[in-house]
Structures are given as structure tokens and as C-alpha cells.
Image 1 (cartoon, rainbow, N blue to C red):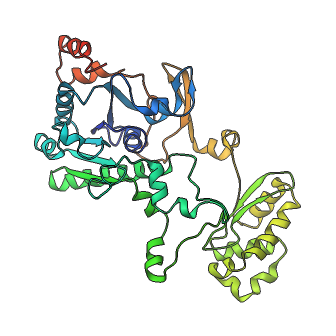
Image 2 (spheres, rainbow, N blue to C red):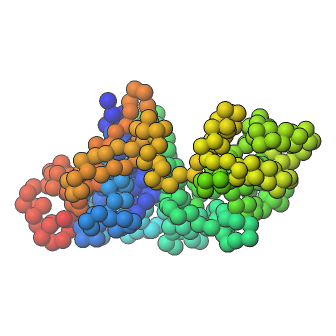
Image 3 (tube, helix red, strand yellow):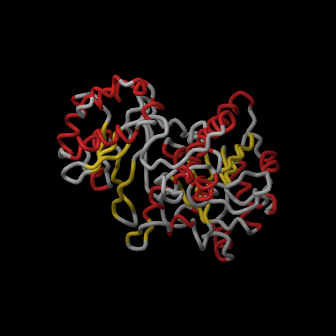
Length: 395
């Protein structure tokens, strides 16, 4: 049983945030129709590594999606989208505010065509406000949310993540928002419009920075791998050159760590009883932990920490991840047949449901792979499809 198998989702968004939300719905059975420009395709096809000219990021981002190549800037393409919306549950779009309206695809008009439609609008800065019509990307959200300001070494510059972090967080938030809107529809019988600004979800994961600022005037500072809430928390290098990460968010863990490294006397200090107190003595704590670890190989450190029931993990790169037995046990990665590459490996569905599990049915497909099938379901004849293709409206 595919829990979302009765839903049809139109993915008319580009790059990462909107398509990520659609991907998550597709993982649990939704019929996701990816709309791409017939000549340019989705920009994510050209992002990152490629094999034989085939983009690998696309293979993951467009998994479980049927791909239809339609030019929405043309009147005939707009009519195709209207007809799709009449028969669909969700439309996900990330055009700059005002674009749908300019194309006579105003969400309010789409809701008149299909009162049960969920119109999920995802933009950098939301649909209103002084920056609404400016181009917005995840990088700008990482900058404006406070994330970059608090990331990096204390004496270094603000640091951006090397991945589409804000987009991924926004995709998770949008998939949640869509499920809430669908649940509300079960009660009211009506669809609605979702307005999600990519600058907001990442901010929600940064903790109570605004709460602390308003209450205490606190401005978060860069602390590198250290934490402003507890200590010791850092990365430490072993004798054999491996890096390990340690966290002591819970008081008992902090006590076990310093006892393990030969400094049980620190537990008796009054300041050790709170995370904030330990942060004030972070140099002393880090020196105790770092010197102990530096005298031992990684395997011994990990074994001793596990024996003491203290939290430790090796710093992995992808070669380590590929051979880790925990990921293997979880089935974190799956190898799939692919019509362009033969086979492709990607991360599996990100969580497991006992009764209604998700599934990756196929990787991202070639441009326009399903155009005729999708439009055929809208009762477009072969002759009409040929005319639209000749005019460049579809591919």
C-alpha cells in the first residue's frame, strides 16, 4: 500500500526546495508530474557531478516523478497547466511573485477551477514585503537567517554550507505544510494557498536566537565546532590522524567523558554542574579531552567511549559512509535500474513506516519522457500533441 497513492502533485518548481518537497511526497506514492521547460529543462539537471553528460543530482531530485516538458509562458502551455490543476491535488511552484498572475494562472482562479486544490508557493522571500519580487536562493536564506553569522571559526569569516541546506530544510517544511493543508481539506472540503519563504524555515532551526536577543540582548557569535550551550563539544584528532566528534549535551555524558579522560576532579567543580558553566571553562575541558585522545588511535578511543556510554562518532567522508555497517543495516542506500546510466545508487526514503513504507520506484527520467502520457490523460489527441510539439510548446 502506498499511503499517498491517491494524490496527484504537479511539480512546477525548479532547482531544489520545491522539487525536494515533491520528491518526498513521491517517495510515499503520490503521482508527481514534473513540469519542465521543453528546451532548457530543470536547472538541476546541470548541477553537480554528471556521468556521460547525465546529471546525477537530477537522478535523486526527480525520482518517482513523471516528466512532462511544457512551456508555461505560452498560452497553450498555460491551458495545459489549468487542465492539470483541475485533476490534481497539489500544485508546487516557485516562480517569482506575480508570474502566475501574469500568465493568467492566479491561484484564486485555479481554486475556482478546482476548489480542493492546494497551491504551494515557495519563494526566497515570500509573496509580500519589500523583497518579495527579488530573486531568492537558499544561499541568501543561509546569509539572512543568521546561520552564516554564527557558523565558522571565531576569528574567521561567516561561513556558508557547501550544500543546499536552506533549500533542503524548506523542502521538508513545505512537505509538512502540504500534508497539513491536505488534512484540513478532509475537514473543510476546500483547498488553500501555502506561502513559504525560504528565509524562514532555516531560521526556525537555529534555536531561540531572537528570543534571547529580545530578552537579553544576546547576539550569537561564531564558536567553530564548540557549542555556546555545553562543553566539551568539539572535534578531536587521534594519534593515527582520524577526527572524532564528541557531544556532552546531557550532564551525565559530560561527567562520563571527563572521568574517562582522567579528570574526575572537574566534576566536583561548582561550574561543572551546568552547560553554561562548562562553556565558561571550555579551554580547560578541551585540553583535557584533546590531549587524552591525541595519545590514542581512533579505534581505542571509540571503544573506550562506547564502554563508558559516552557519545562519540568518527568524522566520515563518503568513502566511510559507503562501508558503514549501520547504514547498511538501515538500508540507507538503494541501487536502482536506470534507462540512461544502467544503474544508479542514491539515498533511500529518509524514514521507515511499519505499515505504509515509502519506496523509490525509479530515478529521474530524461526530459519529456512522459509528456505524451500525461497529456493523453488530459484527453489531448495524438494530432494535437504533434501540433504542440511542432510549435515548441511541449517536448
